[in-house]
Image 1 (cartoon, rainbow, N blue to C red):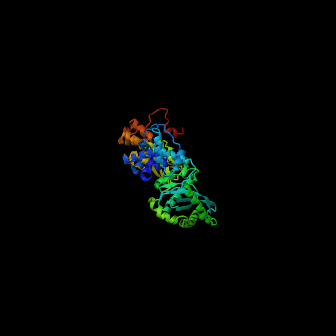
Image 2 (cartoon, helix red, strand yellow):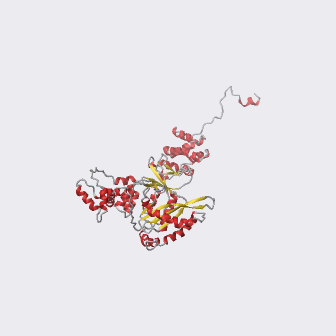
Image 3 (cartoon, rainbow, N blue to C red):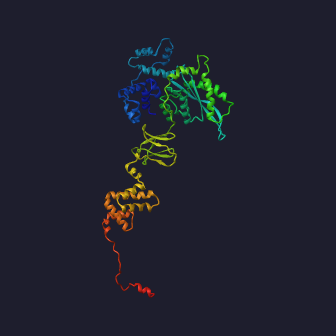
Length: 508
C-alpha cells in the first residue's frame, strides 16, 4: 500500500481528522497537515490522483528532515496521577511543564502523543463512545454449522461471518464455505447490502483474508483494501492479542452462538443457501429483541441513529478480484497470469507489472497505473496480444495473412502472383510460406515493382520460382534477358565417334 496515495485519498474522500488519518496510516499528523495544504494549493482532485503513478505522487511530497534538539521527557506516571484530579486537563499540565523547562519542552502535539503512548502500556479498560454510522466490527464466530453436500454426500462445516454496527449494535450474520479471501469479500458485499449503506471504518480481526502481515504497521490484503476504497471506507485492524479493540464483535459472537447457532444445532442442512435462509429468520428476531437496559431494540436504534448516517452504496456491488505480485517483463513483453500470457506495452520491458484478475478481465498495472486490459482466458500456455502493444516491426509481421500477401502480389503483376502462389503450394504450413514471402516484399520495395515483376517472369522461364532465384536474378541484373529466346541445339556437329541411328538399327 502506498501511504502517500492512501493519505491523499482519505483527505479527498472522507471527513476524517488529520490525527485519525495519521493513526490509520502510521504518519505524523503534521505530515497529514502538509498533505492537506498541498492538496488545497494544487487543486488536486480524485480523478487526477487516480491518473498519477506512485513515483509522481511521492515526488510531490519529498521534504528534508531536520534534526530535532533533545527535549526533557516528563514523568508520565505523575502526569497520569494529576489527570485523575477534577478539572485538570492535558493543556494545563503541558503549560506547567513548558514553564518549568523553557527551551527544552515538547510541543503540545508531541506531549499528548507520548502521554497516549504511556497509556497504551497500562492495563486499562476504557468505555468506548461509538458515533452513529462510523464503525462496523467484524469477526468470524468460532462455532461452525455442519452441512451435507446434496450432490457428493460429503460433510462440510460452514463458517459464520458476524458484523455489528458500533452505535446501534445492529448485526449481520452470514454463512460461507470457508474463511478464504473470496468468501470474506462475498460476506462483506452481502453485509453492505443488508445494512443498506457503508460505515466510515471497518475493524476486522487479523485473519489472513484481511491482514497479510500483522503488527504495529499491519499490511492489508490488496483485494480487501481495494474493496474498502470502492466503498469509500477505511480498514483499521484490531491489534493482535487485544480483543477489547473489537469487544462489540466478541460480544455479538456470543449472542449469535446463543440465539442463532444453538437454535440450529438439531437441524440438518444440505447447502450454504439453506443455512443462510435459516439464519435470516433468527437474525431478524435477534435484531428486534428489546434491550434490557436501554429503550428500544437494535433495529429501532439502527433506523434512528446509524442508517441516516451511513454512506450510500455504489451503483454496482464490488466485483471480486485477485492481485498477483509484481513480475519483471521479459523481452517478449508478455506477463504470465494464471498460466496464460498477456501483453503489455513494449516500452515496459524490464519494468515490473502486477495483475488484477476478475472472473472475466485481466488488468495489468505499472506503478499504480493501468497499462493494459485483456479478456481473461483459461487457455494454459497460450498468449493474448494487443497489436497496440507491439513494436511496429512485430505488428507488421503479425498482420500478414495469406489473403493480404496474395492481394499485394496481384497489385504488382501476374508473374509476382505466380511466385507467391508457389510459396504457399510448396510448403506444408501457411506460416512457413508467409516467412518466405517477407523477403519477396522487401525485394520489391528495394528494387522497384517493375524490376521485381521482370525478375519473377525470368524465374518462371527457368522454372525456379524460389525466393533465392528471384534475389539472384535481381542482384545479377538477369531480368533484362527475359525477352531473349533461350538457345536450343537442334543438330549435332559430325564426328567420327558419333554412332548415329543406323548403328542401332543394324543391331550394333
